[in-house]
Length: 181
Image 1 (cartoon, rainbow, N blue to C red):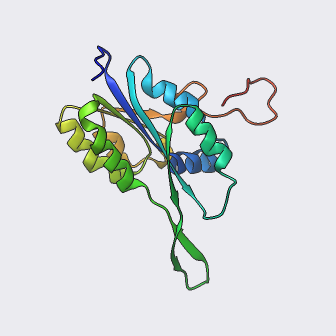
Image 2: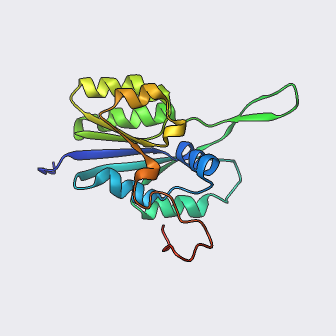
Image 3: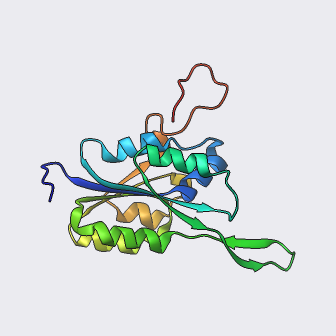
């Protein structure tokens, strides 16, 4: 077993949750490299996992998935599943990683001092409280506009992603910014 005097951290990123919030509220994309650096900062990284949902047969996300893996994330992938069709004929697809994220947190809990969740989904509040009751520090990185208040209220630290220096990718065509991964 590896011994370190630094707190051991696990980072769990709900990629779709952060991606859609950044796109819908800021017309930008998340700089997942900076998010990981911020989440770890001075601690020993045990594992960083990003959770991705893909459409079957669609390869357009592959470069993004590859990039996440080169940044140090273990990428877990799920294919969207048909859920139902509305009365108006719109097909509703489902791809939810919540239980998978919790399962990974549980698998690693004995190896972690700090759990960092990248999601604003309030469904995580109860399980995060359990981890805190077991002596774990719990932090959330997400967008305040799309984060459930009960999630913000229950964790040790909430970071509004836009407050992370270079947490969002520069707007394309802006010559005054440097390229971010």
